[in-house]
Length: 244
Image (cartoon, rainbow, N blue to C red):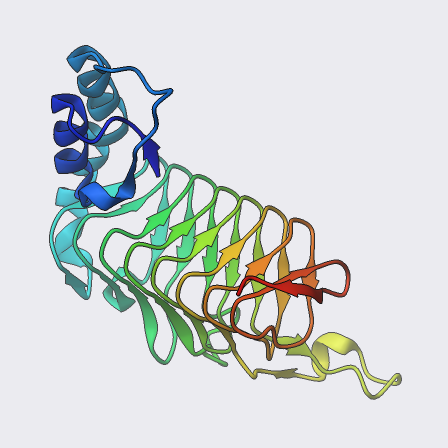
């Protein structure tokens, strides 16, 4: 959320440019009473203008696009015909996405994938992965890894910090006489429900379900399901308390 005064003209312009509702703007008494228009215009130009032009030129290659689409510099999207985006989606600079898979990639309205993100549905074309679904208003921080060999579902209004990893696939290694990379993989999938917050450098392993509104502490490794409204921390992550 952005700390601006709700009633200011700058906040109104900012929310319009960003395509977000006023409820996403924090009422902060410490914020300046009036944000200079020049600041908003500078931000819009450097963060949005060129990215919007790149997105407009790229839209025809997508499976579907719900509206305004921002595409960062040096971003590489393989198999864009397997990518659907909603309205006002932004993919940051230097992101890599391989969208090829059984279901491909679907990004809801107002989704953000920040700089240097890595999204991979399929590692080998002979064994396509399942796919990635991300709900509306979800933020994915810089340098995050979304491995969606198994189905990776991320709900609405989820906040994901920097360097978070989702690994929806696991190598078989039962036979010590055979190279691990020759024993195949298992895919159970990962599900993160609405309203969760995952701190920086969290790792979520295959087969995990994180319930609604759960909070995962920075640096945690999530190996088992986390219930709704729980706060979980550590390696492996353990529930320390409930938010309700």
